[in-house]
Length: 376
Image (cartoon, rainbow, N blue to C red; front, side, top):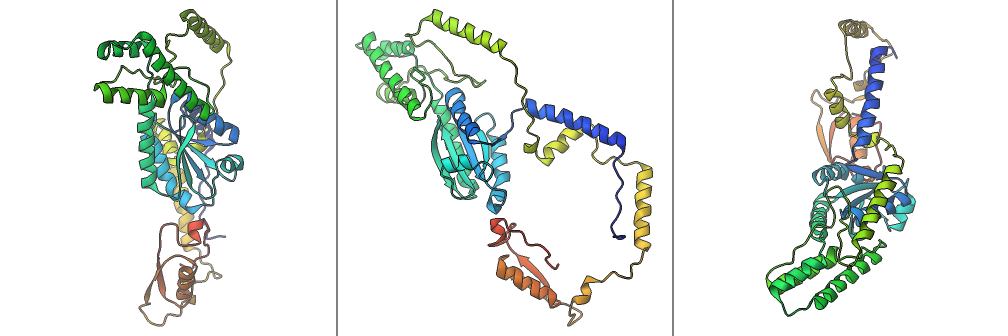
């Protein structure tokens, strides 16, 4: 088509520069943990839930979506924004129900989008639909609950608490109470298919501390179960031998040092256009560098196009009926099948229809169906 403007091709030097930048950007993204993780199979999903239930205590929010789902596309920016807002306090993941059917089937997902919320390895809440307010509310509740459960109550702390508030309790009685808390924590971990912590931690420790505060107006000293780097705090609860603990830690350190480093793959597909452009600007590289010669050549092409006359070219307005010098302005409310059909016939009749509808259209477009060849 002679009417198609000709764009200047990228210079070879620019291509090499852009390729080097892309490789550097891949390395940068590989080093950073993605804000939203795309889970590709059921094994990865189970490992994700188990890892954060056992080792970090962070809640996991999962978005089950489909590429052909209109509401999924509408809620996606809000989901990504929420992930950035709660970065370090919660883990956000996405599951494509078409590419990862095993996971969606195991979780009983029947409509999209569906959001599921996990804490301590167990599903705590879920809902379907593009409800941003509901998603924000439940996420906030999960983060606060995770902070409450990120506690460790040692036997020594409990002994010191009773020595201060109720000296009638013997050390054996305090130890029995602490053992009950440990059993409760182990049962909770077993129900979530996690390894037993063997300590008074999580919801069991939080509940015991609350009861003691209600009775004595003060809580025993609680410690954090998980550290900021995402590791469980393995403090001695009075039963474990210190030498065994030291030997285990030294063995684990040596095994970690011997283990080969696994190179993380870059999640470039999770980076937005704004992220890529921002990284480019940081490195001082322009996406479309132009020189005076290229600009002059481009202007000449446009001048040639403007002067070129095509006898076969047809004015699209020639099909308008043109009943008057001022075509009627028609407003069609709704972008469903009826609204689009009305707009098409109105345009063919020489009118100027305006369709008022949501950003993703009506009944059909809300389900991800696109409408093409719309006349104006």
